[in-house]
Image (cartoon, rainbow, N blue to C red; front, side, top):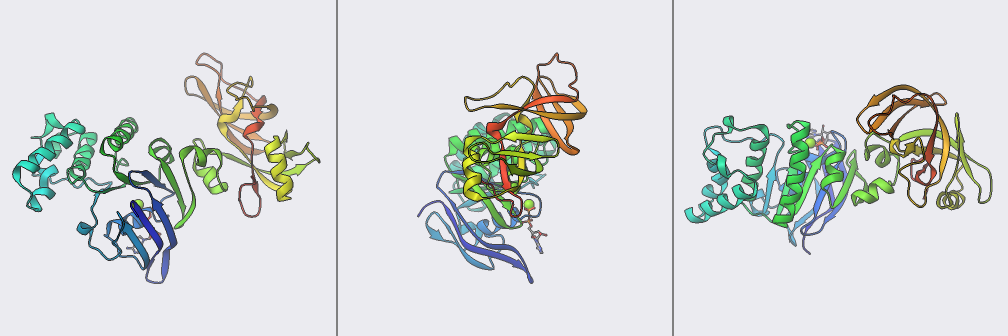
Length: 367
Ligand code: ADP
Ligand code: MG
């Protein structure tokens, strides 16, 4: 079996289990992003794959080989960390070639691999510079170059963009996605940033407290989150949650609470009847509010909701509203065009085909 597999892997520090039995299966060539809040066990998981941290129990296989107890250099992996840890006294070429020289690779081969990696990362003009004479983004690229020259089976990234400013992060996201296409290697990337996960991943693994909450493509986890944790974590700004009750009967169920009363789409009408739930949590994404019923799809049906608006933030063609529905805080992101006056309290429209319902007790999605 190719790719990377974790089977019932656990990790405990002393008596504290930080990773309960974990199963993961990454296909060869896939770009997987493990995302979750700080402290949920992302780095621990990655370090166990790399062999930098022993597992407490379970098995790890890379490229069809059981590597559970193999040292890092026997695993055919290359890792890039948040701290670039470049050698300050070596130039870019020296930093990139260090591991190959240490491994005693022939000079010509080392030079060629550095040339190819530098070309790919657009570092060719800087090969003779020291790290202190490079920008943050260039340093990050050197750290990646160091990994790329090794042409490993699997690349592991631990929050490599966290030290960069927002604009550079966005550029580097694109570069990483391009790099993945060029290299065609399995990549496992961990981050707390859901935007990085959404933009780069073939598949996303969402973790909370060492447990996998959902695995799926960016579209799947955004469109059909399995529970309130995933729903609240993926998407920006975050989904709004309101305490609600299902009312009505037959094919005309509604979801109502303080300050709102919305018709359920047929899909949810059926799901609620199967599930039998009445006490629910309603999930409304900020981007599904509008003023003119705009931005919908064929399935869209717009229903009115009153928002009492505290602040309207101008962000160009949209406005972010800090608002409330029946006293509960909500945010809304409304497309109005760049010349619109600040939005105020009143009736807005919500695309009811985009309503989410969750079991109020378990937080599981009702689907
Ligand atoms: P993340 O990378 O998702 O932020 P980590 O994998 O670094 O999380 O940590 C997961 C949990 O394991 C945290 O609760 C952290 O405090 C704990 N942990 C990590 N390393 C150690 C260690 N060496 N000793 C004890 N606890 C640790
Ligand atoms: Mg970490």
